[in-house]
Length: 127
Image (cartoon, rainbow, N blue to C red; front, side):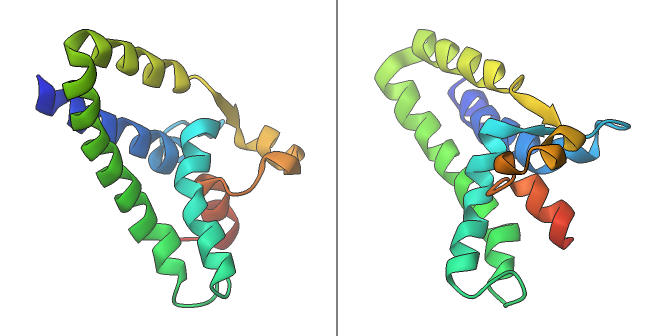
């Protein structure tokens, strides 16, 4: 059960941030909570020279995998500290965060929401 919780805690936010816009046609949904967390890697890319540099791979690939690995590791700590009942509460909070999504049209119309959202970076710059 612990391994299942840790795996889910690492993969569900990854799916919401990276793949959700591609599997929800015709209105592509972008998760704000996890999209911003996974999009922070692009902020580091901008500090290191911009999206046209070799550092772009860090924002597209390395950062999302690093965040997922950290969530997997955090799942172990949360399980040990809170037990199954606490893990259940954390899972509920993560599920609630799944519904904090907007459409890509809303995101484009409200430019203040854009960065550092992972899905918007991919849409603007291409993979």
